[in-house]
Figure 1 (cartoon, rainbow, N blue to C red):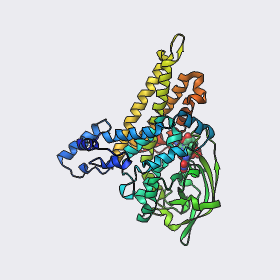
Figure 2: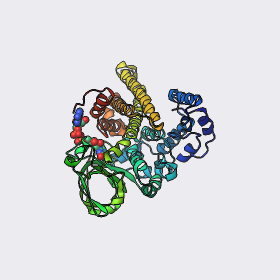
Figure 3: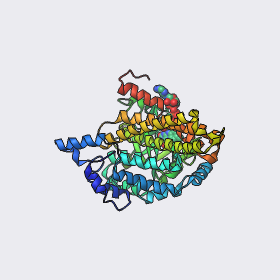
Figure 4: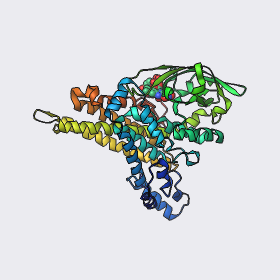
Length: 442
Ligand SMILES: Cc1cc2nc3c(=O)[nH]c(=O)nc-3n(C[C@H](O)[C@H](O)[C@H](O)COP(=O)(O)OP(=O)(O)OC[C@H]3O[C@@H](n4cnc5c(N)ncnc54)[C@H](O)[C@@H]3O)c2cc1C
């Protein structure tokens, strides 16, 4: 979203193209905007201007341009091949890391650029809309939201040890292990346990649907440290651990689950047996892990919304082009309202979702509550992406189902976003209970 004039003037002096350059170029950093610290009339005016300004700032547009330039070098053939071979886009991810984009939302004192969720969401949207779809953004997006609990709840030692290397890509922190087969969305019922023995914890259990395990050095894992029946509340007694996968050996066995979606990104079942994790790898307070994790949920919803928006725009761009070119019954198919209206509707839905995504991101970056907005952004963006990709397939007719035309891949990607990382139903549960104040339904 727009920034005050000071930022725009400062942004015009940008010459370098690293993520930190965008931060340094601004007078007021996103999230720590010094204009909001003193309650003067002038500052209220600035805040009003920011909230009502629907333009991206100059540096945000620059971020968009730079990320897109990098991503555009990987054309449709690259992504088609990666998806077909179920192969991780290593070159693409490495180039992003080298260019500094993994450190975008990591604070400057730990080697990052200290940008906000707004800017992080722009990066992920551009990676998706470039043509990569979720095979591109999902290959590396976890670094953006897994870093949040580490920044917020890590000890100084943990932050100094991990964050600078995560920022450069030297340490790949891309895996987050919460889900288990028996508990599904009811995380409080997970059965993986961590038992403290001397100066380490011993972890046993099973996880399912864990992404990018093969592509990570570190994994953030949730385990019960107090049995559910002994915990003061069901949301207590869960803890977070930084697991170094390089040391895990045969304590973690992995089985890849082939999905219809995001073929280039691995999704795994994990079997964890007597995994020893040093006590200093406990992240945050023992027993408070679920609360620590929840701190990162709003950014995650916003990032996922931005990917959905990118995916919807990508599908629409391809569909509109095809609808103009494809002649059947002596006219472009896009002249038929049966093709034109659903595309127009999908476009409108994406634009609406985008407004909510920027509202949520702006609130988050200003330290304001944004749970309702972040959830609504994810909900509306995932529905809009599904509508857009579905209509793109319809517009392409038979070719819409052919791998060579890509839209079937975007459609498969969009289907995932209605389920993970949180489903449409669970968001509606949230809105019903926490926004509308209706009785909890489950
Ligand atoms: C490709 C992929 C990648 C993933 N990556 C990761 C990862 O890296 N790390 C990780 O921890 N997890 C990951 N997940 C898990 C994901 O985030 C979900 O948490 C998980 O799929 C939910 O569990 P479940 O599928 O067993 O659904 P269930 O909990 O069994 O739910 C099944 C259906 O019932 C609905 N439902 C359940 N309860 C209610 C209710 N009370 N009211 C209304 N509807 C309800 C749900 O919305 C859903 O539609 C991934 C999942 C997928 C598919």
